[in-house]
Length: 286
Ligand code: FER
Image (cartoon, rainbow, N blue to C red; front, top):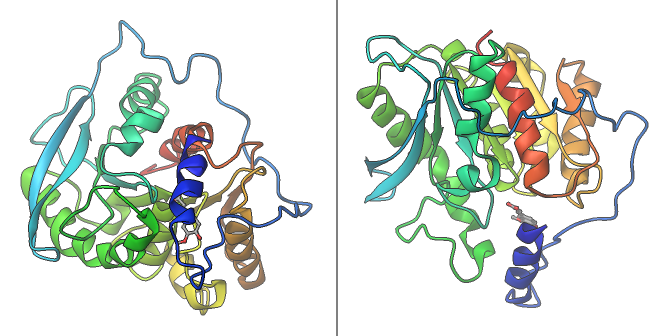
């Protein structure tokens, strides 16, 4: 909830002639239900006695922005520099930055536990900063940076991915790359993932924000979506942005495209994103 409270403050700074719906009334449809059971006890607790991965903050040169930018990178337990790992690119929300996923969901804990239990493939997780502008801190009116979230498409494809693939041995085929995000990052993941199925085979939008392209524009036909190995859509049933995801889900249904539609009883908050990552990570690179 902290996130939406912060947003409410940000929205108040908008000029009156720029309407920014923070949320809409929630109208639940019959199939707006959880697709998966809640995680078992202990899923998000750090465990002793299992191997742990590593988090490191890396810099890269962004030709797109013209600055040096930061990204947080998780390497899995027993990372073998000679092995080509698959990579999940994980994008944050409008009030976040490259540290948001770590603060909200502790991906290093979830992944360490899933990998120890044999439930997820060892993978590298990259958490870049999705605000592609020279000052990429979440300051002032965070909505004013919405265009920079669109510009991040080039930073991700031309700068972030090449920097990761130069720094680590990784898989470089589409089946070895996943893209997901929360809220603004969910919109980015759907917008970029569905226009670049040649780069990503696994795409997830968690609580996607109104930066998500309109359904008919996002999915002019079933072509790109059908190429994906996994298309994951989820949103909390108590989230005022649910309408955005419902629109994408309805379009996918109309086109007959298989996808996960997961609507548990959460708001626009970290509890939703933590369990999204838990479920999504298990389905990647299998
Ligand atoms: C909006 C409401 C919410 C919007 C973006 C958001 C671009 C993003 C929320 C988040 O990232 O948590 O109208 O417009």
